[in-house]
Length: 259
Image 1 (tube, rainbow, N blue to C red):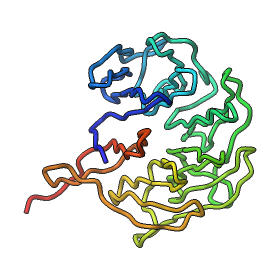
Image 2 (cartoon, rainbow, N blue to C red; image 1 turned 120 degrees about the horizontal axis):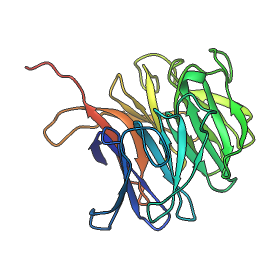
Image 3 (cartoon, helix red, strand yellow; image 1 turned 45 degrees about the vertical axis):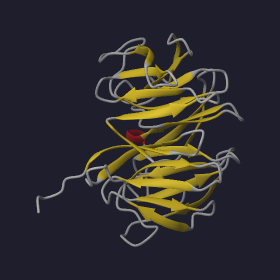
């Protein structure tokens, strides 16, 4: 497990890593030794300018998709750091997280204030939405995280309802897992989700500080708290998985009263 503060990582199929810095409003491609190859972005609005970018994903063709939370859009960047296009501008209230389904050519974006997950094709056409405001069935209350499993199932972190929803690749609601509470498998306010190569999902709860691991059917396996080398606990905000199934946790040190 790797823990980063105020930043997250994404990886393409070749293993190239990209770093997103939330507070610096930048995205960078890194060399195998961790040096910056190129960097893009600054605070503002407009092409290639970010306002608190929070999530990114790389496709099979070397394109990078960046969720720009503050500007409510998805910026598409090539492997050389050039802005190719912008998706969702004027169609999203916010972009809290994104997930790429390269097999089906779909991009899922958490439009949290609209209580939905917007589904775009790779050309930026809005195809459909998952959810509407509510607490029953497929209804959502401020979704903040999304991930796509190997079989195309979509896992949506329903933050306000303290659960994770699962939909198939056609958008059909399947089931939920987790829920409010404190025991194993329950959430307080879940924030993010990733799925590893075995199909297990890991869900970060920013309030409890736990990351909970579930099998493909939503049954809890275990949970743990990410901890810095100095012993300080970290509140998990965003999660990603490296090509070697290394869990990358983006978080901030949790408040701990002095002993």
